Image (cartoon, rainbow, N blue to C red):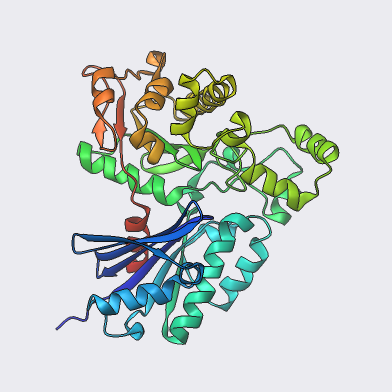
Length: 393
């Protein structure tokens, strides 16, 4: 009798974390931990059953203990020692992290060095790794699943900033790109839907973080995020593209040191900073209806930047065969999809408004029947992609 592989998948964010437990390649349990207003909650799904409950901050921090207890209660495992393999999504710059790897002492040392570059993204993952190791002991094997690995194929001309090349090489300072797990997931889901893989694909991943990626023959050749996930689009609270001179000027005038600037650009900018009210697209659309000028401006800049990057990636690819809209904003916001695609007929993008207005939270084709370029809303499944990689390793 073949022994089942039992493994846990972990996807941490700065304000939430997701877990999935798999038997071989089948997900049998999931848990989503987050903070709602001032309360920590967990939503668990098992065998079509879902339960949402309030938890303490301690339970949020030590999520692995809560998960282990639930898995035992549900008779999925006998005890915590059944969890011998854990796959963790890793967001970190550096060529070392362009590869999916077993997390050993060398990996942890490299991660500790990288954390100063992306503390808000790598910090929660490292904390989770340490908590898991402490709870499960040395019997557990951990795998770091790179959020940048899919972008390892980007063109050399897309990779480097225009600083002295010796500095780029010595410091490993280049554009690594992120959202790679999500982009890979939606590209191959779209290929399954269509029955073939289009040659020239642009993927817009629009969530709290956002990016636009050019994919040619199934490989990433350019993407909007750079050395860190700060570059590119206007995001919920992240600044996106900004003049380096403006950064220096802000440091001087606001009297912020590097750590304070890092927090500022990650947490106080983007849609939140522009509107002065909210980082949530739904809120901003409501404020716009009420005549709030800054909310309207924030949405205009947000959409304009996405459209600019679609055009930029179309140039890189030499055209578009398929535009994929992924992430929670793409899935749920009818009006943002419409605004993104407006007046892009010259790229072959013709949105069917009637279909678009009927599609919320579902996967479907949005292009007009005879349009040259296909438009698909595709639901990303990062957990599934992390699970596949963990299973293979």
